[in-house]
Length: 620
Image (cartoon, rainbow, N blue to C red; front, top):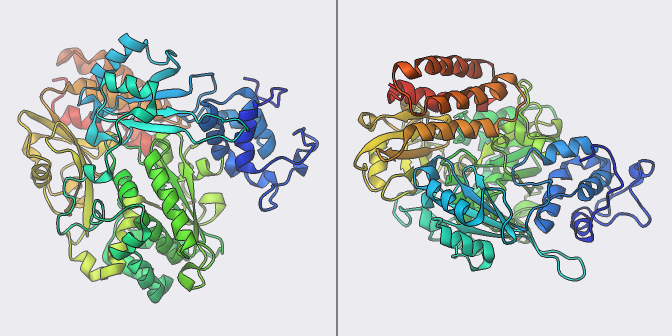
């Protein structure tokens, strides 16, 4: 594809998709370089060059409509947004869900990541290869491809079928059809490829919560008991009590309560939430932003998906409270592109909140203006890093930024920004409903409250479980059906986490307990592996994941993840002295990635492999 403006023209469907998002171009405008600066928005009167942040939504609009991004469509988007074509090309090729080559309207994403691999995804892909051809081969109006984790681990192996929206006469297009097939079987997948609308209906979010309805739940208490589409039902179950209490406390009071509660971030870093909010609120800049990190892409993680699908109003309320506390008037909810049902639920919840005065220019009549914009990711694990989210929203490649400056000082659009993940934000509700002291009474002094864990793999009852901090790993596995016979290991914290042995199940599930055990809670992944699982193949899949997801910005990660994968392939069937040289190389490469990578991806890419070698005796 030429990396400068071209004479390629978009199709009518592609032009309509872009114009529906951006508003129609002025009459007679052709997008030439001389008159592009004169283009003004049909909505709001802003100059086009000020809205580069709409590049990712525009790419989604075309991809949703026709299934891929043609040269003419990309050129039209670039002219409308005054984005250099080379830069737009770099953005479009950054994300796995976009294609710049023609492909069928139906794309079957088959998860082959660690949770699905432990449940037989290889058999599924082998069957698809024999019946439809190798991955990437168009067949019967569809194409299938291997996918990293889809966040459907409780029903592994899983797949997601996406069919581009058909364009009826008149040019108005529909949204794409998305069907989840989990657990995935070859016959069910072929049926879904032929007609996604006939795929088995997706079970309600409560199906992923084995504890649903039990007393004592805090974060999951409404999942399965309140209608996620009904604002009145949400309020009948205690919704918006926390926001009213927040207005009574004032911004400083809210931050004080959150600080006194001891709430630590649930995304993996465990940073004190109150300290982050205070640092953002104290910046001498009027414009501030709130960003909810809902790009839940750590393999084995699906807790945020369950919260968003099963209790969407809780996240809307929590974001409003956070925005009020830090002095932000706009929040961005950055959502995984692979979560179509969460998108629908959250979009509906935000619209209903707006019509009822719970979002907008005067929230609950208190004179506070706050609104939320949902931005979809498009398949890039690295965008879970807080500064990579900023670049993605702003219309750049989702590459992490060097820190300092930190987000609380200079974040989204160069303004002070508080970034929290879904679980962290939802924890704010019980803090303000019952008070900091009551919240801190649960858990341990250093790890307060409850924690959501995503239990998957070879267990009897996979799903999202809520336990107070301080419960042991054995307690958690008992809730999930008990310790399976032939237990080989438990991967705690996901692909960026570490393995625990069967004799380490009594480790307390706290931030400090995990650290003392040489592990990490990370995002709450608990992947159980019995002796039927080929551990070296799991490690290879972990290495493949990090190689694929590295943004390539820094040499230690870009080269190190490749070398790590190569070494693991070489020693997949070797042990002892035959593997010693490559194990030594792995240690050296891993240490360099940990010490010199720009962001957490490269810094943690060696963790699981290291723990498998040192704790499980892999390759001995």
